[in-house]
Picture 1: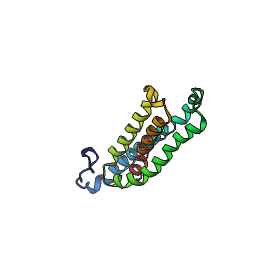
Picture 2: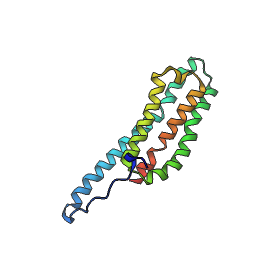
Picture 3: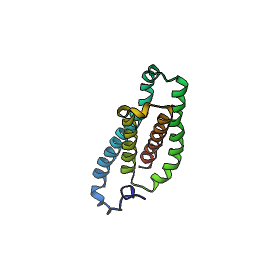
Picture 4: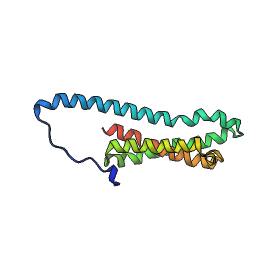
Length: 144
């Protein structure tokens, strides 16, 4: 396992009188972190659908873009299954953040690198990578 994805080390037990206040605070931190993190995943996942009308204006057919968009679903399904077992052996905080960062970088390529929208093959590969990194989101959320 990569260094940053290793599980967090065990910590000492809390004293009985501080359990309620500490756990209440940690529950809220966890809820807000998962909510914001998964909302970020959802926003990054749906970007390509918003760009499709402009790509059609550039000369791509709906069928070609549909083939490229299928890469997200294929990779997302495979990744959720395979990355779930990897997530169980890792630190979910870094696993969730790492997947979101990589997914955002892939979508950044679409906006700022002309070769990314130069062919259906390039779009398929990038969308496959995006789907793979998207699959890293829920396993980390569900584990915590």
